[in-house]
Length: 383
Ligand SMILES: C[S@@+](CC[C@H](N)C(=O)[O-])C[C@H]1O[C@@H](n2cnc3c(N)ncnc32)[C@H](O)[C@@H]1O
Image 1 (cartoon, rainbow, N blue to C red):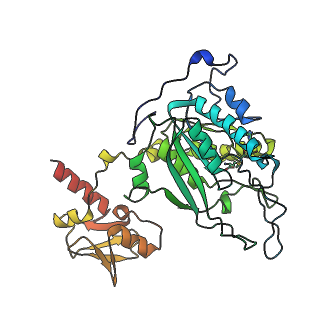
Image 2: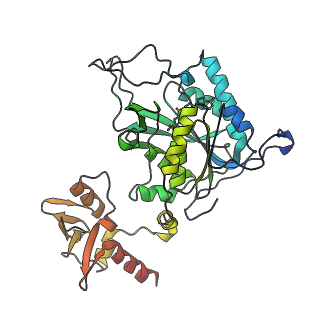
Image 3: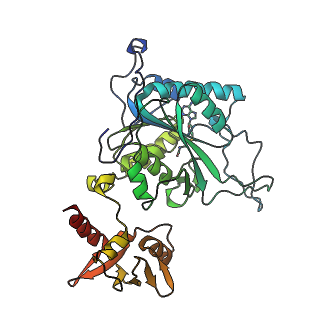
């Protein structure tokens, strides 16, 4: 794994015995390809210990009985497809064991596995992956900011899904970009509850006004998964590729991808979608810095040390708001007060704000973000 981002590595697990490998396995990884047919068979053709991450969004086995309508009578596009149907829990468990066994084999000893599911399947999947030796590192709750209502009004609204993040075993190494996640979360440790919208708007693939796929996942979810547990150049395998959300985000973030998908229509849609995706250039990716490159500095330290004077004024780049700096490093705009991050967030009505780049100051006739003052401060204290 290439490393610009701080990583956490724990101890390694013994590699798989190469003498047990079937002879017909591919010598080279089918990077950027969607393998046709059943994913268990497709994965059997892949070399052992060859991929860095598996992200799996398997059938949920929803067991929906009959059609679902909204109160106005319109039809809900629920998951009623044949690929989500299993004759019994026993069949579902057998299938789960089969694909997880192959996923474990193709993963590198320090590789990571993510599985997303709902209450219908995630407990069964969790038990089976533990039986196979995977070690659960976190269960992430994806809280949907805009869930579909419970149209029948018979139960609570299902407003979340669960993602299990696992290493190859209790003592296996794994990869975690702790620092990048903290940066993404405005300098607060990233928590295990992620509030993200479901996939809709322009991102949702449609044909003739209908969804191409009933369970297309939001790109923001994959963005966080890939950014947190892979590096540029890493190989990500998605055995249930669907519309290729994993491939599209992997391409954007400079990761390599392999998919498995048995439905022709989904494979076509995924290839088209990924072809349109643009990869971020290297400079955009390298801005996500390791902890040591971006030490934590409280804004108050700049005020205390005279780099930004109490009583001086800060403003946003468009000069919509002008704030007065107070002695304790807080800011005031009229009656509104707060930290550089908190007040910036409040004024914009945004979910978060990086105050270092949002607020600006004037220095010798030049307008600069306060991050420039932070750099000067760091240079001074490092000397
Ligand atoms: C829950 S959906 C994945 C959706 C995907 N994450 C996305 O964002 O579009 C599961 C997909 O797995 C495919 N699938 C189900 N069983 C499969 C199997 N045994 N082998 C390969 N693909 C399978 C289905 O056709 C479906 O597209």
